[in-house]
Image 1: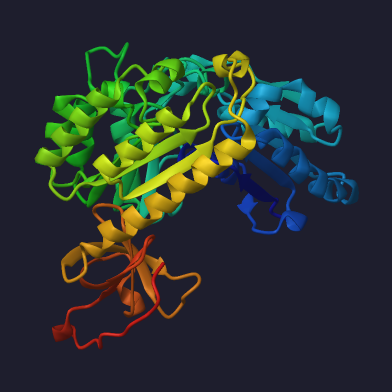
Image 2 (image 1 turned 90 degrees about the vertical axis):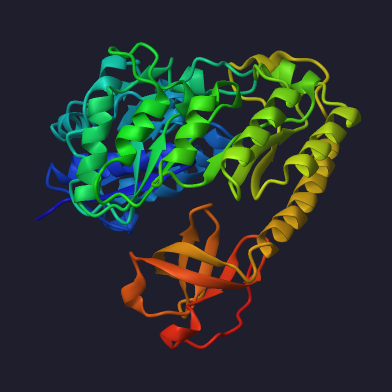
Amino acid sequence: MTRKMYIATFGCQMNEYDSGRAARLMVAEGYETTDDPARADLIFINTCGIREKAELKVYSLLGRLKPLKEKNKGLVLAVGGCVAQQEGPAILDRAPYVDLVLGTHGLDQLPPLVREIREDRGRMCRIDFDYNAVRRPDSTAGQGIPGLKAYVTIMQGCDNFCAYCVVPYVRGREVSRQPDDVLAEAEALVKAGAREIMLLGQNVNSYGRGIEPKTTFPDLVRRVAAIPGLWRLRFTTSHPKDLSPELIRTMAEEPVAAEHLHLPVQAGSNAVLKAMGRGYTREAYLEKVAALREALPGLGLTTDVIVGFPGETEEDFAQTMDLIERVRYDGMYSFKYSDRPGTRATAMPDKVDPETAGRRLNDLQTRQKVISLEENRRLVGRRVEVLVESRGIRRPDQLTGRTRTHKIVNFVGPDHLVGRLVSLDIVSAGANSLLGVLPDQNGFLRESFAVE
């Protein structure tokens, strides 16, 4: 009988990529995926340690899975990702029913370690950094059906050591994959049916350090963009200090490169940016935004903001609010600062009290929602290109897709449009999505639905 595996993924797109790779590795071992953990012979929890209470969420999930382990003694319960790297053997001590703790560099070891555990070789913890593993080609790329959109990791780790961030500690130092390996993986995914690829890295703009012959991130973008059959190319995350004029030109010149950029600013105050160790000023950031918008009119721009960083004053926060008015982001991920283990900010004085940080976050999010709505309304009456991704989950009477600028568009249409590029007329806008209709000549009626 075929064994089944259940994978729970926390956090970012890189974790989604790693979870997909874990699934492909175990499929090669004869496993099938399942959406029901009660039916699984292997449960792999892929964790993220970036946000507050990440460890508590993981232990809470493990507690809920404990009865399954007690009922099925053959179940292998594995914890991977950033919390696994951070906590290590402490997970085995705190949750004695966990069989395997696997760090961020150990994904390739998942199949042989599961085999060893099944052979009664005991519980295991593998959290050593293995930079050679990062550089090895992904032998599973393109296997199975990747879906319309696919991820490709181009690097792992980070050398920036921002004061609040655990990534260098749980993902290791920055290592770039060989460009030929990245290209081969992307080609395999497109051949298997992917039409949009997202290149992933903690700081994609610094890709290529240590690669011989010398290859920059714009070089890599141009090579991937040339793959026949690829319709759209995106990438994340871009660190502002490393955003080069060459990359901006490449985005403008490559037709496949989508007009969207996620450019985390984190704060609008130079004092806070310096304390964070971000390596740029608000003035430098605004200059790069201006250059982007000159080269890419209509660019979709999103960002990350942390409020309540240690020492942040009301004036500092006011400068952040001023910056979002100047930039007018299409969307934003915003958070209250929280101490993360091992980071410099944990030891910083002048912590902002939770009530003040919560008020600032609410003010920021309230204003950003208005800006997002206003920016989306600019598209009403325009015709846009949409890659149709699926039928809506909450509104199954609608199809849903994204524009080149990464905006969600919902519309009424037939199922055969899924996986295709269509032109839609935008008739209504909410803060989080747009409502479109197929042009009248195609015979579809204009219908009005609520948008978010």
